[in-house]
Length: 268
Image (cartoon, rainbow, N blue to C red):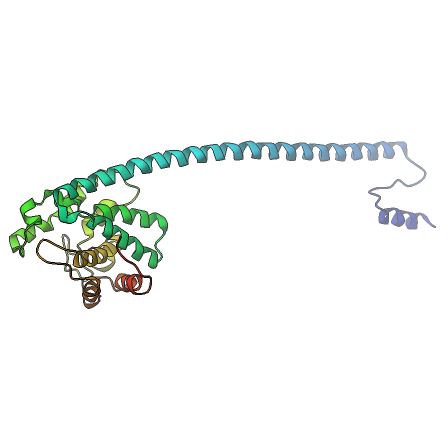
């Protein structure tokens, strides 16, 4: 076997290097030094890898700790926020017995509609809060108007119409994670621009306010009021279908119909 065949055979067997005969001491020393340097580099690489793994474990632990602290802080904030929302809602309900339960039921239906159209959970939560507070501005409306058993006159209705602006003024200074004050301000705007207070139309009205508009009307028609008995769910759904594309966003109306007729929604 000649030298070249021997070299090829050694490489096939896993040799990483070779020295030709006769051995040159300087070349041998250079090869040894190179092998030692390679071994040192491999060792350093392993040490670095182990250190990185340790750093990652420590970092992951710290991240988890910080995440837990953030979750605890958020839970406390959420509890405080819920308390504020319920306190505001209760203040209105104590003053206007016909409002009792209305805001919660509107919030319930609004959230069901929002889920049907695929709104993200975070936005649904903001909608829930806005639903519970959407009529908070009625706290400024005289009780004799709110509880009037007969039809209200134009001047009285003009006073009632101010409640969405008053609600906005009450809520705008509260640092909600959502634009609750804006949703409350716009919940009487109509899809065709005929609503109040600003006469906004279509996409110029926030989606949450468009949902509240439908939920508010359906709940109001299905419930007893000082000036009339309940008209029932069927009549309420007929109303929003008749005004679909006029007072109400067509997509929201369609979702509301599905929620009642296909998903079996019912007010608590």
